Length: 323
Image 1 (cartoon, rainbow, N blue to C red):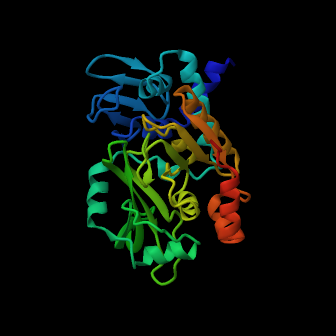
Image 2 (cartoon, rainbow, N blue to C red):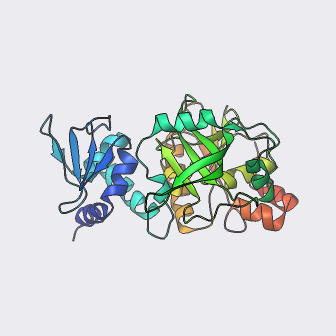
C-alpha cells in the first residue's frame, strides 16, 4: 500500500472527525455529513459519506466530487499536494484514539455559543473563580474571555439534560469575534469538575481560533488547555496568551499577522510534541521566532499545583528567549 493509499484509508476511518474539524458549518444527517460546499459554507448541497465508501463526497449543485484530502487541501489553502499529505498525517497523529479530542470536534453552533456567553456573568467572586484558585491559578488580570454560568445544561448519551455550574470561556477569532465557547462543568459544592464522563466540551467554530488572555502585540504564548495556559499567565501576567483547547487545534491555530515571537506551551506527551512541531513549522514559514515552553511534569498546571508558584516561575523564565 502506498503512502497516499494508507493516508486515504486512515482518513476514511476518521471521516466524521475530519468533517467536524475542516467543515464545521455542516451537520450529520444519517450516514452523511451535509454542508453547503467544499469551502465549508452553510447549506445542504455537499454530502460526505461517513460509512461505506467513507470520505467520498459529492456536491449536488455543481457535480464536483472528491475525497477527504480535497477537503483538507481546500480548508488550509494548500498549493501543493505534498502539503496536504503532510497535514493529513499530522491530523491523524493528533487525533489518535489515546487523545481525548472528541470535545474539539463539534459542528458549528456559533450563535448558540454567543448567546450562552452573553448570558454568563463575570468571573470574579464566583464558583468558577474558586475552582481556578483551587488549581493554583490566581488571575491577576480581569480576563474578559472567562465567565460563569450557574446553570449550564449538559446532555448525556441518552439525551437527558442536567444543569451544573460552569466555567464559560469565549473562543474568538483574530478580529475578536466570538465563534464558540468552551464549557467546564463544575461540582455544585466542591471546587472541582462535575462528576460527568466529559466535564469539558466546546461548541462553535474552533479551527484557527482560541481562548485569548491579554492583548497581543508582537509576543504570544500559545498552548492547549485553558488551565495550562492560565497557569503560565499566573506566573507571567504581562505575557498575552491563547488556549487552542486541544493538540489538534493548537497545530491549526491561526497566527496573528504582526507576531514576531511565539512561545508554544506544549504538553509532555506525543500529541504535545506533534502540536509543537506543526505550529512551529507554520510560524517559522511566516518569519516568526518560535520557542517551546516545556513543563517538568505533564503540563504547566501540574507544575503549578505540584511544584508551586516559585519553581514554575523559575522554569518558565529559564526558557524565555533573551534579546
